[in-house]
Image (cartoon, rainbow, N blue to C red):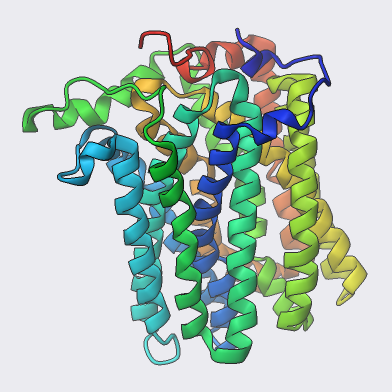
Length: 440
């Protein structure tokens, strides 16, 4: 087992790993990964709420995120299909360019629709952004994992989360500020430029050295094998089904809570500027601090214990929003709830993402990480899109956020049992053990 999973006991050189080439690349990849999510997440929720759309319809729009959960269905294409003309730039680089262009086009399309005149057309546009963003994520995640060395997975995951948060917050903040001044259409058009950092990173850095071309991708008859190969490899590992169950369960409460925060803020009477200051502003810095602490905990405690701690913190953080809902509108209350939630999420963003990255086989990086990341939030997103609005209206915000806190318990317990059974170490793939010089 490498340092990627065991952790290092040394506090030496805490800054140097963050400024190395591969972690810096992970940062810029994260910037572009975060912004499509913001466009159909909190930003679209605010836009719809301000246009007078009812809560059930607003929360139903989170079903657009389910496209992200289906990305494993076409991730094998990113692994194995060589693009014409630009394919000579490399498998990962060429797909970065194509997916980036698709995201920009989808965001422009979303900018041009009007929810007040055609809610269905807006839904279609949101789904297109989700599909393009999901494809971009497939390539970005594969590029990030392959460009990082095994010992850089923790730091690289942290830098990727820094980038994701900055990209999503910058896009959301820019959209809020511009929407109040030039309207939502101009705001969305301006945010399309956030697709560029990942595209430029691929062009400057080139193809990852750890990229392993999968075999059996030449003919039409190999399509099924192309899809099944990554899944078969994963499920042959000891405890694979329990690992998948953990992936499905660990983030239900967190996802359910996060996708409804803007509804709470709107009902409590916060203005766009207050949301930008307390939600986006304080949350941003708390998240960055959490990412740094997560990197330190990962290095000091090792993967298993740091993941377990982060799961507990993320579960408890939902309770702070139950307290805020009970308290009512309070700037200090909002700052505290947002700060704690983002601090816990920052820690989890490093430790859990590093574990999920370590699960990949380098021959199937795109397909396997797409499966893992898609499974990680599918239950929470489905529940948010189908029941969250109704649950809030029936039980109120306080009981709703207490429920999301309780939903964190099964994932915490399962991970602890997996640790006791030795399944965490047994589940990792070559991304956690193989360097660029080793054969596939």
